[in-house]
Length: 348
Image 1 (cartoon, helix red, strand yellow):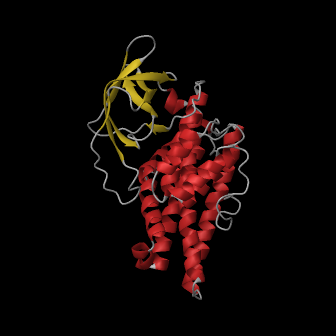
Image 2: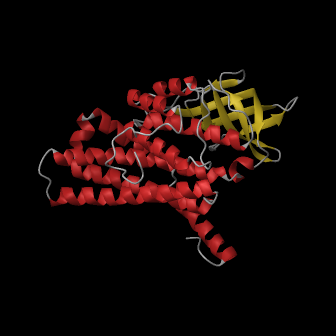
Image 3: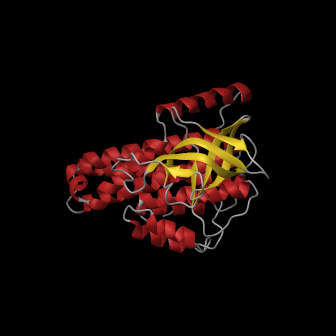
């Protein structure tokens, strides 16, 4: 998939030589069928350094994420944090070790707190519970935020080491059904600091990584739109069907343009938090509307009888909840006011 032709270019894209592992990743996506296992195997077997956004490869990386997501959203949800971890480690000047699979766990939850305490020889220990840890039982390592006396800090943790216990799953979602996101108990687990206190949220790559997630949402919406177009081709479309297709195409092409421009800014080093929030919010809104159009245009039949389509719709619905809707718009509004107060003009 390319952002210039999001709905018409077939999967996978012809050019993948910019990352030798891309072919294996795309093959894993076609084998996933809603399971993370094929992608985890491909990532564990890859011996090449993954591509890092902001280094001239951002557009190709995001287009690949979108292509994978258009094929299978669980595959994309497995791939994206692994690549995000690679970028974070590179930014922290830490080595990438092949054969590992990575998660990134930075969410907080009510009545849950993960604390880090210094130990010996530069290591720390983790104590407490971390929520929303996708694939915690299956990834080999994770980057995890924890609270210290000085503030929140990021740590690298082997997920199969001592002191790490994945709590019984309460995951009942029909979306991402085979990719549970539950809680993990840490009882003195050994951890290595990554960056200084506060670095994870303050680093330049944080905004870029957030748009990478939006590229996955976008790919899922493209998959839904392709189903809508295929459904309309099975019979003579009436004016309503044409209207729905036209609106969905217009919205996805606009989102593709935004993602393409954001990729250029990322490689220039100018993709700031304000722009990233705008892009993420717009892409999320487009995806929600495409889901609504699909439901209204095709009715209950595909959701009840088409396994691939029904799974994609459910997967995209739960994946989009990483965007916090009005709360993220409120955060964006605060940034807009601050930007105007400090610079006197809007950044667009």
